[in-house]
Amino acid sequence: MARKIQATKEKLKEWNGTSFGNLARRKKELEEELAIIQQHIEIPEYRMR
Image 1 (spheres, rainbow, N blue to C red):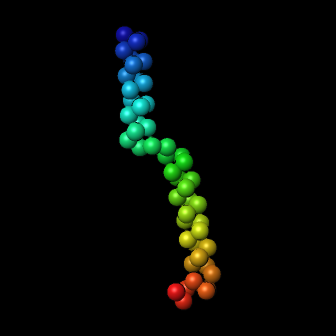
Image 2 (cartoon, rainbow, N blue to C red; image 1 turned 90 degrees about the vertical axis):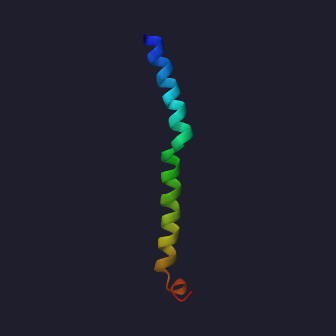
Image 3 (tube, one colour; image 1 turned 90 degrees about the horizontal axis):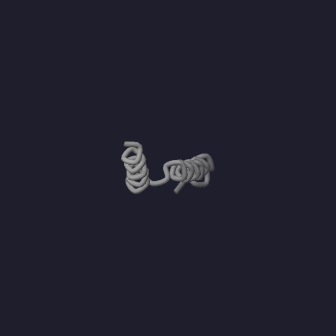
């Protein structure tokens, strides 16, 4: 029984990685991108464009 649970756990981990990827890394990338966008909004030069 323990082997079946372990095998299921491993398959679920693999599925999670393929389905959703590394969410922590993706979140960090999006936060960095958002910070750049916010900086552009705050600079008046970019408001004219």
